[in-house]
Image (cartoon, rainbow, N blue to C red; front, side, top):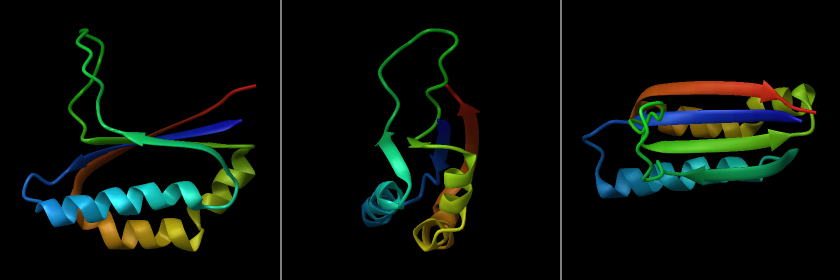
Length: 100
């Protein structure tokens, strides 16, 4: 399995409509063919020194393998999301890992 996790720090000046548009866009990523599991959410209310809660939205997609994730990266839904929403974030962090 290939696990793709992305954290977004959004611009503070987004209007509620822009934020809702971003939320719809990020949720659309779960419809890309080859996505086995998909979750999107906001930071949990946990407070331990090792937890980073500074991001606004976290997203995790699970794929069968790296090839499926590579296909996701160039899929029109993903490309449209990046094109339509990249101006809404000030930082993005991606963490990928593989599991048996």
